[in-house]
Length: 507
Image (cartoon, rainbow, N blue to C red; front, side):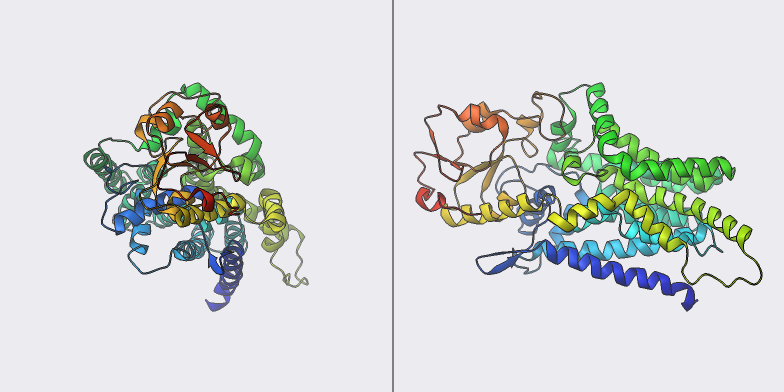
């Protein structure tokens, strides 16, 4: 038993060291103090969670009515829990990243166990699936940069393990409830697993199905009761204002541009293997393929994500389904390796010193994540430079404005969180008026809604602190604002701003 677990333990140790180095590598120093930050989207959830922990409720601005400018309710509740402790603002993101590291390590173990359950006698499938999952770039990146991707992947993989192991469906039902609580659209994966349970034994699907229905209804009711709307503001901001065909077209475009390298090799091999080994009617193989394809279909339907060009890889939605595809690939690759070894081996041959699954997993990682990791080795994590700049800008604003100052931003994560100022979200993720307005230009998730006449002309923030392409033309000739040399716009008659101090370079 210990011998079998040695490769898993080695993978966990290597992964833990690598994750820690990744986390440390994203840190930076401001005025002699080391800071950590999550990706900008995650810092939006951090702002809500901080306000909740302080007793102000799930509000974007303290004193305003509750608003749901996030889509990861359960994750935001956990972030709020972390804010109950006296963790400095410079280190609170580190606590989140360390949490995600533990989640990733737990996920590696669960993937190993799923592969073992699928092929109990295989020496190849478990280490292959665990290694590729451990170092699949988008999963590592989005998890360690503070998004809920790692937690959702873990909850779904735990559900898979319990389902194929024929464990108590009560536990599966609890996992479904937790995953849907974390992010409502995880209902897609839950439904796919429930279909698998129904195909195997109709009675075993009853409790999980009830869990999906009850949890979904409860969340929708709570959102209507607490926030005044069944759906988050982010839904209206990202999805409405464009036709379904426009979204799907963009979703297919970015899938082809950024996700095919991650997925196509594994997918084609898996489909070929299913046909060759006649697994078309194997429920477990269909479950894994169905989970992956469902996440791809969802990604295409919503139009993809905003960050594919920056990460140059599959987006967050597809990433959650990738372990299922990796497991299916490892299953079929293990069968191929076993057949090859059986065909070539002779009684006099000794067992290979290196498990062939190890070099195969490294080759696979080179294909699906090699370029992303190479870019990381040269330029650190994607989006990090902009995130660091925004943290510094937020701190700069805090030092050169009074607490009553109102700022306007396009990037609504780090700047509002670290400045701790009342904030107008110019792109509308946290403003229902903008979010439910008309879209501009070609569909691009999260970046098509703005109404400067309302957000700037009517609300008149003291500062407009970051730039977005359409802003320059709107501000041209605007006599109420002065543009400082570092790009910040200041309301000329504001008494809440130290314009001289604010004009200094902060980067």
